[in-house]
Image (cartoon, rainbow, N blue to C red; front, side):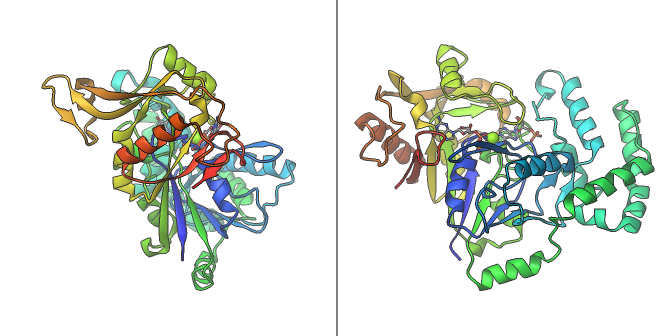
Length: 427
Ligand code: GDP
Ligand code: IMO
Ligand code: MG
């Protein structure tokens, strides 16, 4: 099988959905394998802009299976909203399938996430999306989670809640000073959630996957967030609670590593980050504002202004390593069209010793002592939004991309010069 994984190679919002949507044309199954409605994935088709949180970005095509995998966390209220919005747009949802093994975000997860964020001070603040992601994954790992399949077995669910809910209520009231939930309330909610998910739940996923492998179907894995937000590999603790790295595609979907041929990382031509945590190349000046304004860098899920900065090749190289990237897609190159010069961070310098670091320092406490080492490239001062081939790009844009390739140690296979489908150069 010649399957492809698309992942974010920075701190999220790299334009994964645009790339996924384009590659989905040639795929049979598109799988979201981690994360939840913290993700905000934008697809612009011929007539409209769509924003997905949970539903895979292949849903705009007919006759594709769009699968929400076991490694995801699902808040049924948001899922329902997304489904209803797509129905209003007459989007065919017959291919939408949901794993019975995915975890359910309960209202108390949202309460805890919101409280933890609002009450956190200083470095304790993560800047989460307050969508209950961390608390849902915490419960999954501590084996107190509710899975999709639990919603369809009322007796077993009631027994499970007898164990979970008293503990949860103790945590809610004693630790956080929040209101407890009655078993009746939660059972009622779960019955509502079951109704939302019922038309899509795929208890026959083993046959579906088995047949897909036998029939050599093409599977496209759509990552959410990005390498630097990975709970194991990112800037911990300023991360999400799942595995956006390529390895997550296997654990979160149920397909093995031997099914994957290509791993495409997606990077912007610069970098953005929402929420707290180290960001070496951040620009807190007029240049940063210019990138934010031209690139419309405001969160899809929360509307928060994104932090902006120059491309960090140390980060990119790190992503190539920990996700085995076979190529990179570079998006938003057009945002630099009016820039006189563009910088690339090639290494970090330890301000204390003068030591040059070429590999990403994974201990976030070190970052206050580091500064980026930059090289400067001349801009191209040309509108590139209609370029169709690499050769049509101005020489300075070509040089910029070639230098990125050199520094990252990986080929750039896709260049995006605008949000529309046709504003894409495949090499
Ligand atoms: P994702 O979370 O990685 O899927 O990315 P988001 O959808 O959160 O953010 C990417 C934003 O950039 C969206 O608004 C896209 O429509 C837009 N976009 C994607 N590629 C390009 C590009 O090449 N140029 C410009 N100007 N916008 C782009
Ligand atoms: P997509 O898929 C950008 C960030 C949050 C916060 C941290 C933890 O659109 O790229 P969480 O709510 O997950 O516990 O928040 O992760 N974050 C994202 N940043 N894009 C995303 O998704 C994100 N999902 C979470 O801002 O810093
Ligand atoms: Mg996004």
